[in-house]
Length: 623
Image (cartoon, rainbow, N blue to C red; front, side):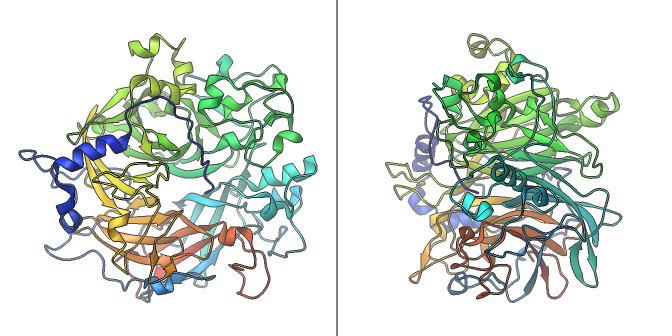
């Protein structure tokens, strides 16, 4: 993804690195190193008890059946990709694995439709892009059909595409250019099937594109509220900057709107409100220049005041019903959502963990009002009624989830109603003293109840501390915690899983800027990267995917992307013999750096694509 490098949090809440420093100094961090890697989630202080690793939690997250691990055995047996091979214009993979390419940008949504093959002298028209797979492949999930190991519906996000890549020019020059850019964003829902040994998209009534001009509706406390109504009276449309994702136990897809602020700008006089500043809006935007041709995105156009409040939500999509209108679930709060990890907690309640991907922003949790099956039986979305919380991390390895509702006296003194709390969730979190984090991104739930979160990096760290001995800290880390009361409690215990810098002396596992994250039912953690990577033996690595055995802390590189790309998105078939990941913005769109997925040297424009990974011996991916 392309990140907004600004920080809009001026709350003064105690920084996470201060909490981390106090905690880790008490644990003698200089001695931890390999011990922490080997034992994982250690107790914070003498006398603290270890988390109960035997209390496995039944969740709706697993694909396939978990396999019992013999004492002393490893979950990882593949040969890692050497650092020396993790560079260059073509992907590399473990010698035990193989990969294929699926649905690159410009693939027709239905067989026989318009195709774009990366010709540097042409681009799709706006009308053609509506019938094609978008750009900026990111989060995704496969919804099986039948047994699902050879057929399913893939819902995939299209986060972003810069003007040069999509338009072939530095900036749009007309509304047609803007429509092309808009139609390249959003979500694709496409049926895929394994035919003659190769996965491909197939003709299906389920195939559809959802983009920034698609009709949408709202659910939850903000639905119908004046905060979502514009003077123009225009109906709600669209989703944009769709980063990572989630999926629900009732079979729907969740797409998350991240850096939505960058698509807005101002053509005339405009003074940002406090809320607009907190969400990073600016007169110039992020260079897309939609506001110059589409008044919906012009912050200075009084007819479209509050249009920006319609973005920054988690959006629910039914992948099996192309006639369904996407619903923005406002009870989950408005921020720069990275992903939405759904688990089933105590009492059958739906619990959603979410990170707000900006420096010094927060980690959130939503807990449904009651059992999700009961709510659905009564015609109520489990994502429309419940409580939103924000995390506060304490020095001693404990934490608390602070309620973000109008019943909180601190919020009642500042906000008019719950709809306002949720629309300005960042300000609400500032108000209650949540802990600012170092860019919280993907969150993954492990089968034993542990929750992991990638903190990608923070180049604005000014002082080193025991847990982050480099300043600035360009490499990030991964934390983990476990909530009380099987995910629905308001307290938790936490610790560091790995500091990326601690891997840099190991050829097979060196990485930086952890981003994408997924836990399989056996306890493997798949780590994808986006950003600054370490230099090993004089070579700076490409972004990559690694696998960790969370029982031992071992990490191995399984796949490496191409120059200038991000490795992101992850989903599997039910038997976990096939994995799908994405290469986003290969070469940043520059054909002189890579022509992926076309043969190198072809001169073709690189295109975002999905990579299909299988083990040569037919085993479980990651083993």
